[in-house]
Length: 144
Image 1: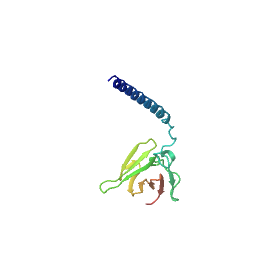
Image 2 (image 1 turned 60 degrees about the vertical axis):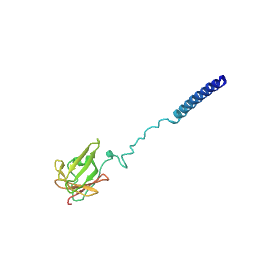
Image 3 (image 1 turned 45 degrees about the vertical axis):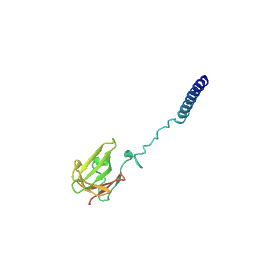
Image 4 (image 1 turned 90 degrees about the vertical axis):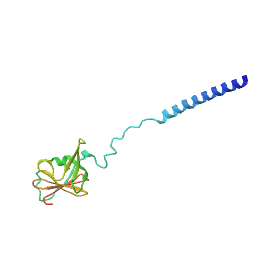
């Protein structure tokens, strides 16, 4: 019986030592492979152009070059919701604030949402129509 007691104790000691050796070795390997990488300088969720990249303005020859500063140029079109009951556009500014504008609602004084398609939103000012698309381009036309 003495022999079996010594064998069991030796086996338990060996298993304990072996388990500790594996767990210590595993921690060393884990620490060596888990080094942190620096974050990328650009935001991968923004897409091709950043929100502060500016707006491309395509003008019609009939429109004068002087125009009143309109808040629409500070926004980017991010979504169009069109239904039979109500239609909206979702705009975002440089600070990341979302604004939803309903059909025939004014964004600011004199700039009103008048039409929607699946690719663009049409705003009306006193003297021109501003057509905004998802490529961050605003076309100014005297007639729509």
